[in-house]
Image (cartoon, rainbow, N blue to C red; front, side):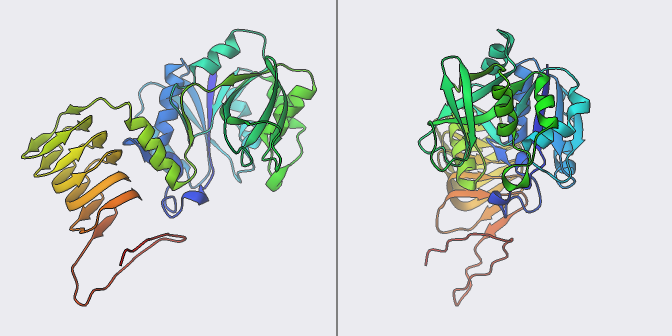
Length: 353
């Protein structure tokens, strides 16, 4: 069985964080989102993985995966990105007639993908879909289930026929390629995977539902990344490999090697990355501090701070914040009081006066 991870989209909902890099390399618990997906595949025994990329996403994702030791990757260009079914179509030379797991590269699953792979292998099925109950599924694909099979799929319905949303894991046999070959374009002029699966259903194929165990998170928006970080950190086991001086460490806190913490308080669950420097600071729960980050004379909680960023001399606490790579946040104590901002397109910033 092979794996396929569509990663060609430009992630406009996460801008400006994704103005210069794809969302799949944004970190959750100090690990890029796509590595969570790859680790799940390897855990399920899948080591041949196709990564569907665009011209802008390929350099970032390929450089990230070049040193990954447990799988072989093939990078498949999708230009322009015309939907998930189109991603499967351009990946056909890699997939051949092998069954495959498609894992949307911006999704996170607490329990991984083993249950879906095992369900597919256990019987005569043409497809297995991950389903999860949600309060409002109108922005997702929605499934209608009858016994042990899915009998209908609707993409983003105004009036959902059920509360079962299709999560980001699909397992297919080679029959899916035949349905995609004759598929017309659907919503947003794209080739919709829900339309392709509905064709399988209409032809009498067995499309089986498997409920998601544990939590599932689509990291499409900044608040989703923060919540995913919280959920992953809830299972953190603390360990201190770095240097800690005159500091208070409370709860489950992981401090990576070469990190230094001095005159600070860290309340877990929290992660401090390799080579980070925390001084005269407060790091609150559900915070991930990336590699080589500097936090000095500042307070941070419920946040993700990515590699090599600096947060210094901030009088007010940073909370529910998502800060990218090589960012500097500081106060210069100017008189009269002023704000100097350099922000990317479509940024949102809140200033407490």
